[in-house]
Image (tube, rainbow, N blue to C red; front, side, top):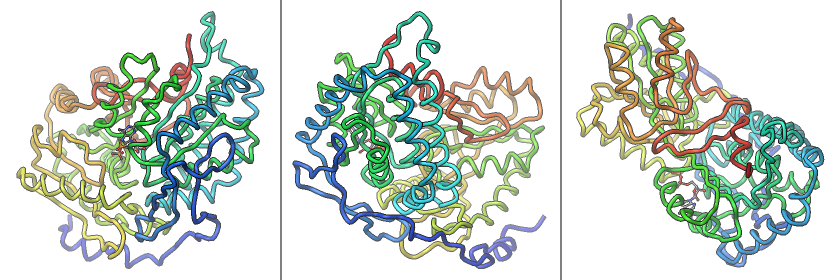
Length: 489
Ligand code: ADP
């Protein structure tokens, strides 16, 4: 087998492929965005705006309103009114028509959404185009189908909406997370106030334009922008009945405390430190590809990313060499280029967090391997990074990094793999690679993770519930379970 050093020369992939950039011309981004309240764009009471930046180039894309407590008050009132007067009373089959309309409009404007998602968030266009946007549309289609069938979903349990839902989402899947939150809430007859993350507000604001176009009754979906203080004002507002949060475990804990004793229903989808487990009987090339997909595509900006790899000792050397070889072929760079595998890190702040962990890994005595990819001078980028010689107690094996960094450990027996995989504060997801069905069943029953993929990774479908154990949160989104989170039964 060729040594890595020679492969480095061979696979300078950024030089071997001609650029294939997606055109930006389809993306209509306004210079300034207001708050979407009661069906209209309104100036914020705060009179404050903040910049949203393209992390691939550091250019300012737009200015976005920062909502304060007075704005939150106004928006919650609008959602309450819409709930009491229109949406809470509307028959399910009528609600479904609106939700189907949103789904179809997303499909019609898929390319524009994909381009804006990539410009604002830094993820490769291939990912936004082929995964984020179609899956977001699918979520609206799926939940539209449930709107008039809630009695069948919860027979003899008289399912009723909760009221106004306050929904806070992160920056890793901005449009998709908005769909995950808005679609089931609307299907169940709730109205919504959604706050996207401060670094990626643009697709949620585009969705607001589309919701106007879909003629949704004013106040049914409201979208406000701002940072953590806006989110906190929403969570603490007495006029909301439900809080749905996806983000860091740290903020999740603050929200759980804030909501305790208020009677507000809560779902939390927090961090993860998933293990991908490769047994010696697995198809190794397929497994390596799955591991690469699980952590490096999308810059590791996935809460269920397979950020740890556990390899059976007998195939460790082989797997490690295959991983290093494949790492060298990954293209890091302009997210708008259709050949790019790893785009930009979402923000300077997140890049600093990742770099801090890369230093910690080295200080802890782990051995580092980084691809030799040439990265652009401007913008926020990180080379895909492997750590071997990692101890279970190392911070890089225990804490969520949220970047293209993989910690690799070995194991000898199934029990050791289970012990190591479960030994973190998280429990969101895991992956098992083996030829044996019995091993898959044994592992899936013992791994403490909300989702376990077998011989694949990062597969999503609106029909499957998603959510975590332990510090990864509680409550499920997606599928029938996702309806339960927005109903009194
Ligand atoms: P990440 O590390 O993924 O950025 P955060 O948990 O910091 O995750 O952010 C996720 C979302 O939570 C963002 O929309 C952010 O503005 C919001 N947020 C941050 N702090 C708070 C808070 N104290 N209360 C409510 N929402 C918050």
